Amino acid sequence: MNAESAVAELAEPYLRGLLSSAGLDVEYVRAEGNTLYRRGEDGRETPVLDYASGYGSLIFGHNHPEIVARAGELLAGRTPVHAQFSSHPYANRLAAELNRIIHRELGTGEPYYATFANSGAEAVEAAVKHAELDRVLRLAETMAEIAAGAEEARTAVLDGRAVVLGEVFARLGVERPSGSGDPLELVIAEMTRVNGEQSAKAPVFLALEGGFHGKLIGSVQLTHNEAYRAPFTALGARARFVPQDRPDALRDALKEVLEDERGTLLQLVLEDGEVRLVERDHSVFCAFLLEPIQGEGGIRPLSWEAARHIQEFVDTAECPLVIDEIQSGMGRTGALLASSHLGLRGDYYTLAKSLGGGLAKASVMLVREARYRTQFELVHSSTFAKDSFSCHIALKVLELLEADGGRAYRQAAERGAALETMLEKVRSAFPDVVKAVRGMGLMLGFEFHDQSQAEDEAIREAACSGMFGYVIAGHLLNGHAIRTFPTASAVNTLRFEPSVLLTDGEIDRLERALTDVCGILREQASNRLVLSS
Image (spheres, one colour):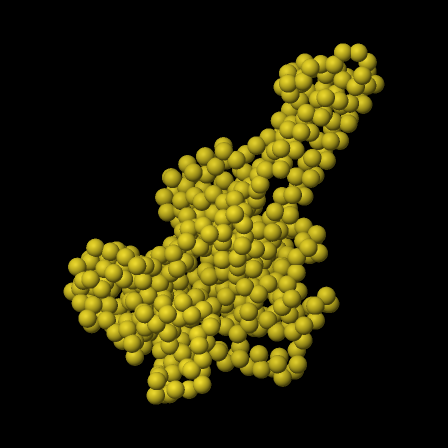
């Protein structure tokens, strides 16, 4: 027994127990390319083909030699990690390079301003926080205009240049005053009260059913999985979830949301010597969040039709669109932005995972110029964000993506197509076992039919307990030396998110392994599952 195994488990011991029950609690000691090396009980290393790929964080694989070399140069050169509140030209270069690529993919020249962070969830929080700041400032501007209009109307009435129409008093339930006092005093007071109630309403966030945007206090309320969200509802923002897999239902749901949530503010206007009361649209929508391909929701791509409905809604409702590209972006689908394939135009983008090249903890929130608020730079910060090391590593990742005319993008599309062809081949051979293959590029899902009514007791029990996908992953690991996991909110779906280095031989290995798994499920032969080394 070594010293580490003798120490009581204090680092998430319950999770360690769950991993152990599925045969997934192995130690990895080395990594390169698409391979992780696990340490056996005898101390020897065994190679494992990694299809989980850091939940999509390794577009160039583990420890890519050029990225590692760049990291070595930076560390050897004593690059400053902590130089906060100073000039960061490397961060500006990174923002500029992201803009260059985004402009090419979107066909726009509008700048996107960058706020850097350390994780995807933090980037989402920054986007949501910025969107709310923008909403609050826009509302303040509107309220100031209303106040100025009321003062203009009052002055005109007192000067005898205008009269107040009776409908103004009737609409507000205020009696017209008699005598020579201020005829608008009670009107303005009541209008201010009504507008105050409207403007104080909590913001509404929209997100898609099945979506995942993180597990922090704000982002978890925008994540559809109730198990993650429900315990913390009192802490978070008000969110409404709409369907994404049925475009007609999505269209109807968005119409209903627009009718339910859009309110009005009252404003006095002076026209041709008359003071009227008019209604002014007031939206409480803070943001609409979506993933172009839902990762934890089961690798579910957004359809063209759904994307069109959403774009039309956000344009009509003047609701900013936050596109979460944390798992789908950075070249994984053959483009920097998976949403660019759908013709979506985001007000905000969040990128992370592969942005750090598998070495740096880096993310970024991008907001287009028309929405950008400079005040945000003074009310939001992060100790480790925008540092020299992570920015230079991210620049190297973009360099590799763009090299040779975007060869990496083409590799992602071609390798993804080859992998998808193989997965479809297995599905066709086992239609009674495999329900669907979904995704795009190197972000693919392989969904099994529900096994909660399985004849085999062990398989049925795993399905009913929510451990089915993890048990299958344990068999792939221990029986075939292949690493992957189910998606967090759809545990019947296995994720396959390898790097662009994926070879035909590695695809063949996975085909043999999945064929074995499907055979076990077809034959209801849990005795053949291998859950330990």
